[in-house]
Length: 156
Image 1 (cartoon, helix red, strand yellow):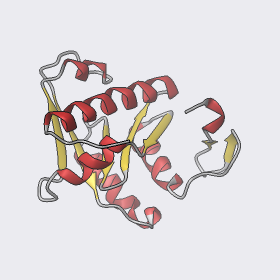
Image 2: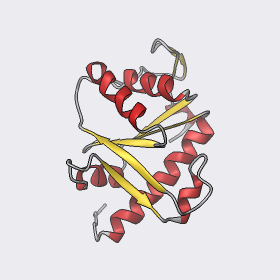
Image 3: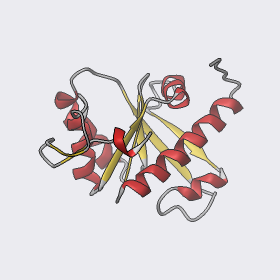
């Protein structure tokens, strides 16, 4: 992704930088920014985040990642001896209506560095774009490690 593909919006969802229009999920980005005090929210549709979001049983409500050295790349995590819990939310076409559910999830998991949308992808954030980008890179690496460890494959 390049800088030209990023659309910056204000707290009302109005474009302030970049070209294009905000996604249909702009209300979700704004909710995360408010709840986490984030300066940047990023969302991916990667293969591994999508596969793992669907592989976790819906009864568990999330995906646990633990014991990997790369976890130390997440903001505030000082050791590989960490258990990251990423909630998984069901997908919807009406994220405005889902804002209360997202707010509740973020309040219940104040230590989470992101969450997954089932069969959709990852959301993560940071105090600025550089931190949010690092979180994406760390989590996407861990998703691929977990997927390969579970014997999952994909063909490009």
